[in-house]
Length: 297
Image 1: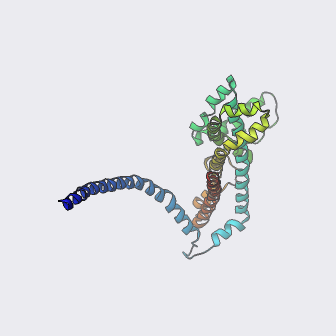
Image 2: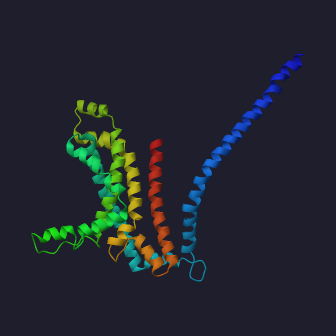
Image 3: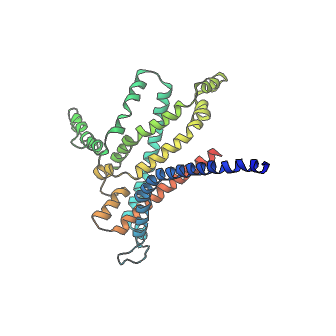
């Protein structure tokens, strides 16, 4: 009897263990079913196009393996000018965007006047305007026969400064498209800075610059990196504004890639441009992830 009593819990425990295993299997299957759509989307929208671009960039007109497309990309004077133009525009636009966005975020965080309230309400608007509409709005405003040129004609006969179809026009477009998003991210980070910390620093005699560089900026540095990453990727991958108001030469890489693909039918060179742009974005993402991992440690 004693032996039977000892065996009873083991016998009754088997169905319970089987039931728990069945529930765990159902949960695993449900989790897998929820992950599969995202995985397939990532596979067919990102992985497959990247792999296809790499394959086409390394394939010559005869179907054989070649490095000629990348050699053309970095040796042709026109393509080299496009690369330098794109990198210069990306760096300058990103720096100006981040500086202006941070200044706006700081102003909105520590100001309570009417001006701050109006800016807080209005700076979201560019985020909800399609890029095509915004670009055509810039053409109507800053073009040689736009509204600004017509207004200036009332006061002077001097020719209107060339803004569009130039470096300045693309810089203006990049500021319009990226400042609201960067300001939103940085404002969210600044709202997490406790007022008590700032007041404590003031009580011990810290000045405004000391408070900013020793408290505010370090606490928002991670959000600054996030904003910088998205701004750089957005600027270097832009197409609508550079295609409509950019110069004919040199061109940003997005427009140059489209020209090589649809005008000259050079699929290999266009794919090499795409791979090069992806490599730059991957490098930016690598430094961002590396800094995030360092901060977590």
